Length: 385
Ligand SMILES: [Zn+2]
Image 1 (cartoon, rainbow, N blue to C red):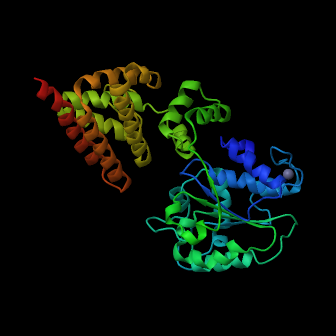
Image 2: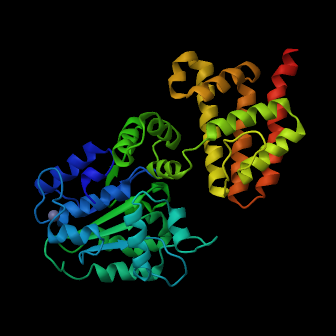
C-alpha cells in the first residue's frame, strides 16, 4: 500500500517520512485511531516506505522487489500479529485469511475480521502463544537488510499477556520496528503505551472522504457527500454504504414516518413486509433487506435525526446536507415533534438496531418500533391541541 492510497492524514505521513530521513524513526510506535479512519492502512504504507529500495521524499516506489512483496503482504521482514480465535492459536495459523482480508479492505473492523474467521460469537484474543511467537519472529536479523517490522493490530486484545512483550518493545534488536495499531488505547497496558511513540490519527473529514470516494469509485458528487456524512469519518462504513443498493433509504424512511404518523395498522404491516421482502403493493422503491441492511437503515435514521436536531438550532443553514425528499420530510417532522420526542426516537432506533444485530426477529422489531414511533409522533400534536 502506498501513502497516496491512504485517505487523508497528510501531516502524519510527512512526519513519518521526515523522521526516517533524519534518522529518528522510533522503534515502537502506537497508532491511535477510531475504527475506519485508516490506522492500519497508514501503518502498511509506512512499512512499505521503510522497506522500499527506491522511495522518494513522498512515497514508496511501488515497483521495486521489496514493494512488490510488501504490497502482497509477503515480504519476509514484514510480520503481523492480530486477534485470533481459540486459546492456542497464533497469527501465522491465519496468515492466508489475513492477507486476503487486509488486501481486500485495510479499513476493516474487528467484527469483519472475526467473521472471516467464522468466530460466530467467540471473542478475539491475542494469546500467550502468540506473544511467544512474536518474540521468536523478531529474534532473528532482517532477511533482506533494512528493517524488520512487526505490525500488531489491536493490542487491546493482548490483555495482561502484553507484559511478555515489554522487553521486546523497550529494547528491540537493531532496526526492528514495532507498529501497534489501536482503536481503544485505554484497554492497553500502561506499561506498553508508555514505551511507544504515540501517533494520534484525527477523524477523517467529510470532504476528504467524499473526494476519495469520487476518485476511487467515480460516483456522483451528491452521492459521495451523502455517504461521507453518514459514515462520519469511518471509511469502512463508507464502503459498506457504497455497496448498499444506492440506498433508497431516504424514500423508505420518509414513507415510514408518514405511515407511522397516520398509524393505520394495515399500512404499517405493508411497510414492514415491503421493507423486509422488497415488495410493496403501492411503492416501488422498496428493496429486499437483510440484517446488515437493516442496521444500516437505522444508521441512516440516526443520521437523519441528527440533521433534524441541527435544523432546530441552525434553521435553514443545515438544509444543504439534506437532499430533496429528506428536506421535505424534515420540515414536516419539525412541525410535529419536539426535542424530547427526537431524543425518544434516537433511543428507540438505537435499541432496535441492537436487537436486529443480536438476531431479533426483524418483522417483530419493525412492527413494534412502528407503533412506538406512532405514539411519539402524535405526542406533541396531542399536547398542542
Ligand atoms: Zn519500492
